[in-house]
Amino acid sequence: MRHDSLSDALVLIKNADHVGKESAVVPASRLIGDVLKLLTEKGYLNNYEYKENGKGGEFDISLNGRINGCGAIKPRFSVKLRDMERHEARYLPAKDFGLLILTTPYGVMNNDQAKEASTGGKLLAYVY
Image (tube, rainbow, N blue to C red):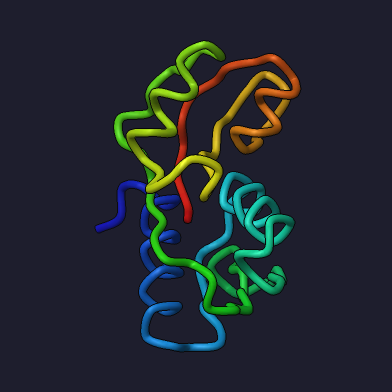
């Protein structure tokens, strides 16, 4: 029984990447699509493609072996701009290594984009 689709998708991607698979298939949602877009822009994934199936849809993801760790952050902490570095130190292994993914009033973005936009939000996931 699945309760958190983002967490399930990130675990599936991480496990497939660690085993050495070249692709992974995860159920589709708008939030997962936004997170995959960020991961592709930052080079953690090669690309992804939406495919329609009888149950709604799924993303076919092309992996490149760059993911060391990723996961959803539960509970979804609210983070202010001034507290961003504390959460980076908690979830990422080193400074300027990896991404925190947040949902903000301006959409889903990573920690660097949120700092540039001078906004906070709710933590969704981390990847390094």
